[in-house]
Image (tube, rainbow, N blue to C red; front, side):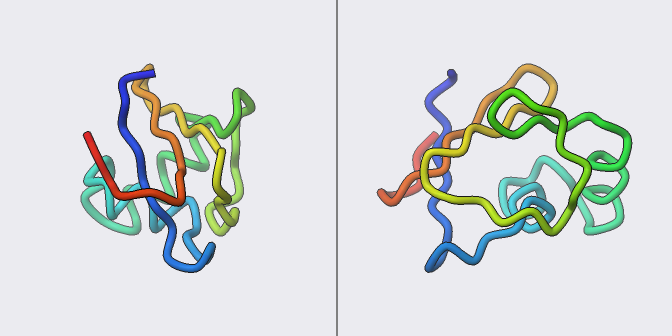
Length: 76
């Protein structure tokens, strides 16, 4: 893991929102394409649901870069 951590606001962060907020995807359409294309893994499994709710402890992998969902501050 690279040490990237993202904090969801009241556990309401969806996978597509995460990709946009972390600047992995430039737009919602790009996030949707990445997810539908199978380029995103959540906890080691390919995730194709763009509205997947993220919870504390989830690990998101995009192109080999990993991000951890925490209840702490956002760090890189």
